[in-house]
Length: 287
Image (cartoon, rainbow, N blue to C red; front, side, top):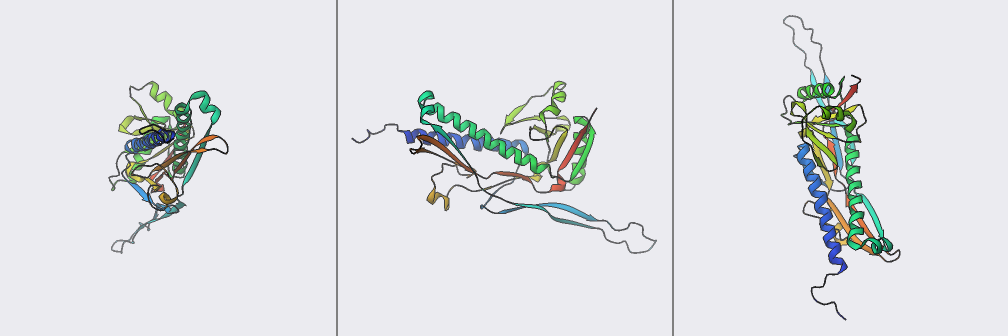
């Protein structure tokens, strides 16, 4: 017998869950872009090479006799690091028994939420690991001192670029003492706590940053790049639910060979700094 018209079937719920996941992911990373002040979001093909740069200064001898020609100093911007943009794939399965115990919607929603947190965590960890390769340095006694020194270095590095606000990533343990004595409000985005610190600096806490270290740069130095998922050749073979941005794709499907209901996620969102010499790695010494 044919299914009665307007009957909700499993595929309807799966589609709704896929759309909900995409919306949560995209809205989360959009909020993170806003907090980081990211203005550049670039869609690249899978396998594209991302290039970062650093400045190399060749300073001529400044001791010049009266009337002699002053030699030229030279500033070159040269490649510092390159890496390949690639898709990242994730999958999680919910068993028939779990669905029986918790119900279809709840079991799948729990699995999707756990997977979403893990995908976000990986992006945060990769971003922090990338910032750790910055070539600028700063030091100070306590968080406020080292952040102030990093702020000063960035003002010098980007003096002529009008590069926007300073962004600082720090370990939550290093900011706890500061938060205890400050009257501020916080908000959360993409798994990170955000607040406005002294000198109007945008600060985010991230456990991926080692305790005793901070990473600082300016808003316009941060980029978001990703390989598109929506449309193109992928759409001919795979039925991923995505949005117009193509930041993430998700599919829900039934695996009868194991009586599992599976969630498969495809993304490649990568946060990076274009200038490594524009990233300051600060070291917090004991008070």
